[in-house]
Length: 168
Length: 229
Image (cartoon, rainbow over all chains, first blue to last red; front, side):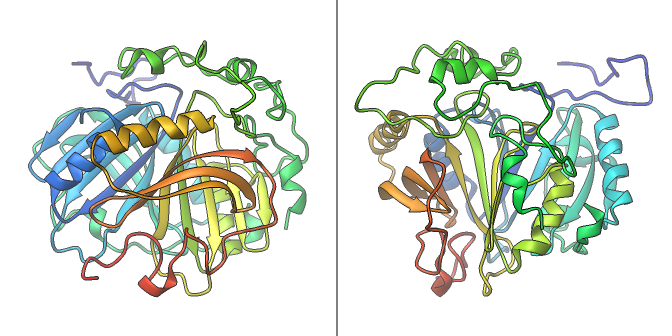
């Protein structure tokens, strides 16, 4: 297991324990009614084994196409709502994104060293005008006790960001 | 509206938001007309490190599988590696959504129509599109894996069928979302629609209207449907 120590001399930043091609990759997380039936579907769909399976949770670490794909069992969710994200490799990248989005007037929720989906992550959340939730995150510890329960921030409604043309 | 956005970037190297001209030299080879091997090497990032899931993935930049013959259609768009994720969202207003994503991805869309916008970031690699539907419900859309040949689509189909997965629909040379594509659709147990597709012509007049397979307003959108139905 890799350590979470920063690989650069700038030690206030933490590095990702997850390795993948390039500097960032897409994250797709879906809420499903039944973990096992979805697990089988996606094992066949992607043609690979999940890299992590926990109670009510499974994660696929796809290299080609590069996707961090996870499913969370949530029988109470009446729609298969999920969230999307961009996974980066350092807390510095999260901070830089925070600064850029903040400057443009985005409504941002920050989480620092939070346990979610059985890993420790530093992240920010934003919601687009149609309610699609996006996180920009780095995984600093590959394992944690906390999954994604009904009270997880992943399932909450966020304030949406409506940015103007002039901001772009 | 930057209607000229489509000319400021290429599939490999979209211009950053606000840029007036395509200036990046990271991806010199044009997508159109390039041989697949040349296209792969022109915009291939560093090889995948230790966690490569297969030899195929690890050797994507050298990709010997990329051979063109008379019966094979190649992708009209170029991108790093052999495959990339696709996310398509149905939105109520493509303009207001587009500004959000210009900032999120920090670049302009590479393709814009009155009811459509497409982003092709290299970091993170994704084919990301917005389709405007006035009656779109929140958090609606579909996912996909974009490949580079019709043969690649067929290989997915063979694997899905061998695994007993129900292939919902196959489409050949269909005009959709302002391009021509070959594709196959499957639906996961919760109603999420996934397509495996190759874009064989990057231009078409047909977008994604009410009758599009991508969109099914009768059930509240094509994706993330209510489970009660």
